[in-house]
Image 1: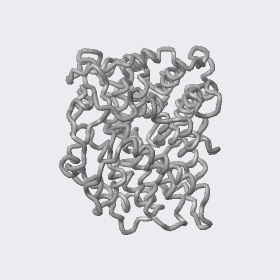
Image 2: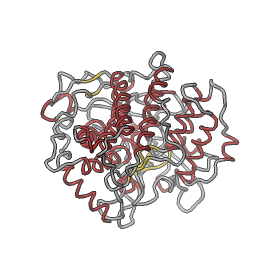
Image 3: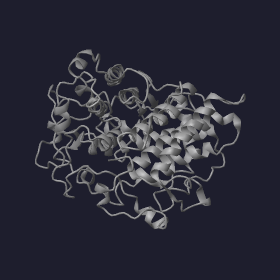
Image 4: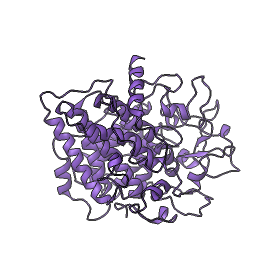
Length: 488
């Protein structure tokens, strides 16, 4: 309890300068330094905001991704997820994915980065890693975004939009700078305590490995399009002896969530239960798709990713936009491996994702290692995190192909399962990159008449009002045709 109370004090101090409403200047005017902020105060607040935007409530990136990776739908008796599953993608659609990321986590990480006291170099390293983490997702969702001129407060309220490919290149530089700070600390450098670093508790070696894993994801994101990355890029960026996140090395975040008002894990509070034990606001509406239940038919993880219908042992899903199908009471909701309680940690990156990234990189020859062993370890890490037991029997049926022509399909399928309900946004992005799972449906009967899943988000209307000379022009059709630079 003391830990959460200290965190809430810090949230008030630093959040005061970052919690403005979604107005025209959200990208910039929240980063003016609060009078009493220090890196030790700013870091846990920024990390808490990372959880909120990535895996928090209805408006989180995770929610959108689970809808566009066709894992979730709404029961026929609920008018939920209507814009998302009807692909009504406009400049007013999910604007927080852009504005809130800038105004909350990124603005606080930038405050830390601007601190020049060498004793705070570990805080700066962490902030640079998390800045790169968020900017990768901004590029993946929007393409060109404000980067080099962003986060300057009143010094620049109309930042230029940087080329997406250039941003990706600079993120590798930023992550390397962070790793160098970790490897060569000043004698006075402070190691953040567990209360100040609510992700990795000041384990700087783990932060260096996390940075390397983000680099690997950045490089692999570009690897399916010819001419974007080479072996030399991997050698320079990740084949450095630091290593990657391995089995059991999940990057989680927990400021001390408890079952009290405004203190629950935000994902649980939105999709699990209220403090009083009643279903949360989105709990009864959110159901499995029929596609997800079918794909998981013999997968032991099914009973951890989803829950059976009522008091039965049966699982059932529904097609998106099926207003005449089964009601929620006859369908499977989010399971206990994903929603476990008010005090559960937020997920930033699972070791399962890291191991499957390594399996892909090893399969393509970019890093050393046994691709099959890494694949098996990634699947087992998913089983372990979800509480599904031993994966040996499952892997006998879903063995690694060891065929360069089909390895990627197997790896991405396992990633789709491992991140279902946990980081759906990553699954949407990986489908756009690889086309796997190859039979992933688009939402039937969608009002947009689209025959494919959206390939990007559109810039928010606030940008066209506040930064019209810089924000790229778009039309509603761009959501289905204007691909991010790394996408074929």
